[in-house]
Length: 509
Ligand code: BES
Ligand code: ZN
Ligand code: ZN
Image 1 (cartoon, rainbow, N blue to C red):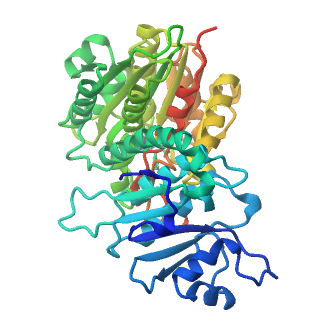
Image 2 (image 1 turned 180 degrees about the vertical axis):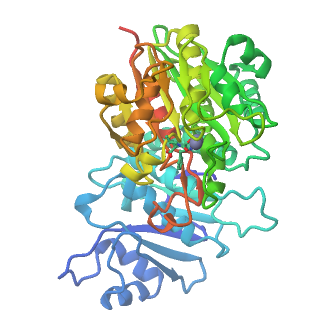
């Protein structure tokens, strides 16, 4: 997607469609807003007539398309809802609604009448970033396995018009930066959407190697033999049932600032989670190809960090394995010794994410002594039960880190909700015969017992855990409630959020 910044008025552009934002109209608001006078003229009075009939209300998601009698394409009015509740997320969804609404209708170019989106409460550069998110992510489709596609908007111009031409420099910079981030989200989605026969642990390692080459990052891949020598019993146990052996992948971005922190970002990369011997029921099992979304997000975060040259040094860790039942699978009752020497009593082979993460966390702590660790994992069904499928669960041992992530979440529209971690949860995951158990086998605080388990492997490092089981992908059943900028499939959740956090990460004090 190209997003040029244009000084001209949107209405005078030659685009196939012009997008105009419109706030919700008041009950007694009769006269056509002055804002729409030009549109009314361009449509030979059609806009005014629709307004009079109260067909146009400006409610969120309301999309009204007019064809210009002069044959110069269409005008698309998109409702923005109440003016008092206007924010960047409204812009993201509105622009996505327009782009999706025009899909398959032959429109390739869109001119956005930017002054109808960059108003009062939302400054022009913030609004421009939101437009980029909405356009790029709204247009996204996973087309790799389609023999034909409908095609859609390929270029969305931000038309400043006279009102905003003075902001040209600011807007151009914001657009360039945000395009880097959103294109990385698209790249991440394309990997996360790959089915498990293709996206094997080795394939994820290949993606990391290619990324390293492109951006000059150091990439290390540990195969199953090296993992055995290192004592990574967690990855080996979980990957033991698959003919695609496990991998641990490390990516190092050296950092843009002199006294930058070292931040480790660790991702769960289960390329398919059948549950293993504790096998899952058949319905929706296909969604478990998305169980690698945390690792894919880590790839995306490293890509965006390197492209934007964020201040901190960033170490990415991917814990990749396929969880399948077979004669060589690990079993309930097994005891697994992990990288840092701690042992796990396996009670349920379907609680495998925490088992692979134990090695990744233990390794990064010992090898890099990071100032902070952030992990991303589609870890528990309980996360979805507690928070639904648009919000990720946040568990953290560090208020500053948690606060920074919550601020980044608010800015990017990738919602997070912090949940408590107490001694109660820590007590529940203790094992009688090992150090920790991977399941407590009773439905109590599933997201938090999983977090308590992970905490035992971070060795006191300030740490934040993002359980992205819900928001990592959208499903058929929830699709109608999802933000319009998310397609069916992988969302790339966490890339915009954690990148934002890294951009603002303070130097070492
Ligand atoms: N990958 C799943 C969690 C999951 C569920 C992600 C639904 C996305 C949607 C994870 O490995 C798992 O199966 N967790 C178990 C843990 C339990 C056995 C302690 C769960 O949540 O049921
Ligand atoms: Zn599982
Ligand atoms: Zn899983």
